[in-house]
Length: 246
Image (spheres, rainbow, N blue to C red):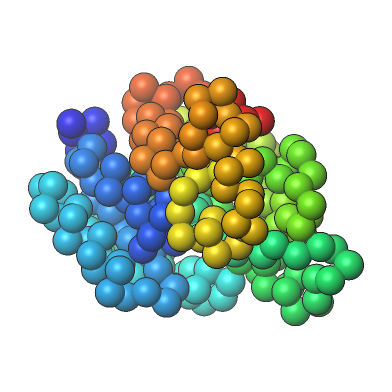
C-alpha cells in the first residue's frame, strides 16, 4: 500500500513496542519515517532496516523527549534529511506502577517531563513546522478516563495530552491539519510487562470481549488510518483502541 507516499513522519519512542509497530506500518504505507529513540540505537536501526526493506526511507534519530533541545534537534534532523514534516505520532512515554503515596517527587517529575512536557513541546513544534493537511496522533492510556490503582500519576500525565490535543485540533483546523489521540488498552509489549504486575496480564485479557490482550499492530493500524486521507474528517477525537475493555 502507498497511501502515504511522499509523506514524512516522526514517530517518537519508535525503537520498540507500539512505536515500532507504528513506524513500520507507516513505512509500509509509503511514508518516509524518522525513528526516534532515547537509549536503544541498535533496536532503532533494526526498525530502520525493516522499513527500508519494505521500500520506504527511514532514519534513526536519538532524542530524549524530556529534553527540549533534543526535541528541537529531532525536528531539525527531519527537515535536514527530508525537507518537510507531514505526520507526527507522539508515542514516547514513561509508565510506573506505584501508588500515589509511594511515588517520589523525582518519579513524578520524570513522568511529567516525558509524557506531558515532552508531548507539549513536540506538538508546539509540529504546529509551527508541519505542512498543511498534516496529521498529528498522540498515544494516551485508559488511565485518563478510569483510575487504575498504581497508575494515577501516569494517567494524570497523559491526561494533559487530551487537553492539548482537543485545543490544538481547533487551532490547526483551518490549515487542514487533524489532531487526534489513540487510547490503547492493555497491549502486549515489553513496556507493559515491565511496568504492570504479572497478574494484570490475565486480567486485561479477560476484560476484553475479544478475549485477548492487544498487539502493537492493532494500535498501529488505527494510527495509520488516522494518518491517511481516509481519516481526513476525524479531528479532536480520542479513539479507544481497547478491544472493548474500556
